[in-house]
Image 1 (cartoon, helix red, strand yellow):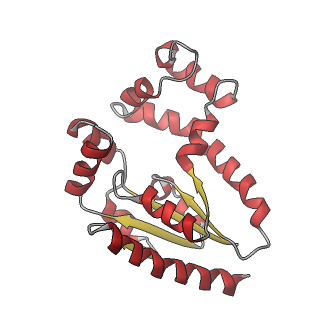
Image 2: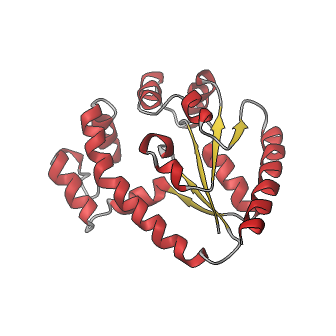
Length: 202
């Protein structure tokens, strides 16, 4: 099993790259999906979040109101650290459990996560891929794709390590300033590299 960490800033195209790798045969786990599972109603994570942040983060149906929670944690670094302390260990546990099925195979297992470098978790992977783009492109994509305001986007960018810092520790850097076709061509080269590494490791 080749363990690959995939990261990049919000709006850099990390999720697009993850989908492209999955289409080529990678086993992909998304940290955001695992993070949502970690705080589903009935889980210890859900209980811990409500204890820390109160009923104001609950939606009428009893689920977490993610927008309300986001508005709190992206405005308060201490609150964000508290939330991460609840969610991150659970995400790591779920990912480790999921990897067991691929342990003695030549699979390329990709963990796509926005905060790999910030948490220091990037050192646990055989290969670290960073998807890079300019801040202006990040903002334009998110305003167009998610309907977020520039202030909301800047708050989320500020909560992540600068892309230059992530790029500095990357084993593979994917530049996503160009077209989708250019990105596909880069991912083709990366996939060939990852398959070769996985075969050599198996």
